[in-house]
Length: 365
Image (tube, rainbow, N blue to C red; front, side):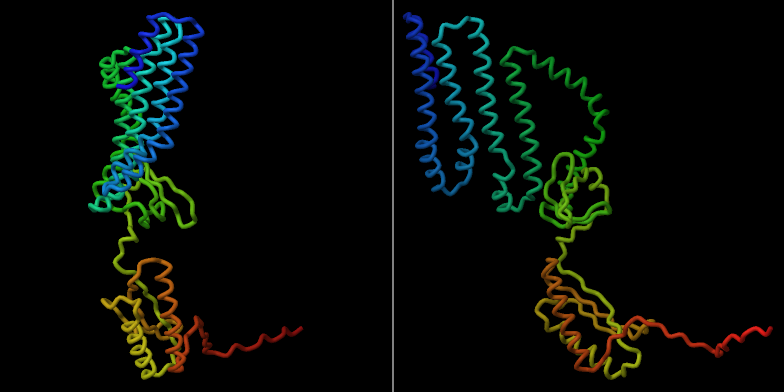
């Protein structure tokens, strides 16, 4: 390794004997060299490697390089500082402290790079290509990240000479007490696993539960974040959302429209038949209406007038487009009613009195 070679050179120079000012000058020169090397890596070498990676078919090499960009810059500077400190006439106790600190920082930088690489967004393209749910990718990436941080922490503890086996055994003994104290958290984590297995929704879906309605933005270990139509962000515990009745409106194959058209009671039967036939033809020929189920029927006698049931589905499930189709059909229904000279009935009530009410007579004095 290049840093080990420089380490050996520094040790030989130190053994050969140098004045204090020479040691300080050498330390500054080493540090300056690594600062320049860091700049060369950033401006020249890294950019050349990045261009080469972008020419390949795989995206993994580019994402790997970008993930380790900042950790490598920090590592180059760390090696320079470490070698510069070795030149200076510092105490043995100081050097004994620097060694494990140097190794710990190397572990941190390596873990930092893999932590960046394990971002769920880096694998969204792979997931979409192979039909894997994005929620599963994001959730799995978070689990692996937690394991990575735990392994890095244990390795650092070993570097400083701690008994990791005793530490892990202590965690095992305290695990039961921790689980009892965090029952809700554990329930939410298992709720998250249930959601991942059943896959009732994906990120971006419009869902509705008894407690909230909106678009799913994120699924974490503990909760699901939903953006309501009022643009508020609601955080629902996974244990709650896993045990509630859930409607996923985004998975509709088509979207229903159902209403009763109420016309006046004095409308002649032939006018009713003509209106029904024209409305049915309108729906059957409309490009935005699904042809599987179209119902236009004289449904009955309402309090305010005669009711015609109109029942159909739009092809689009997008709310704005659905409203546009509904509006267009409503306007054309009004045109049909105008052509047939059929009036829409308004809610009204007539009161008939059997006996004429006589005016009150004044009292005789």
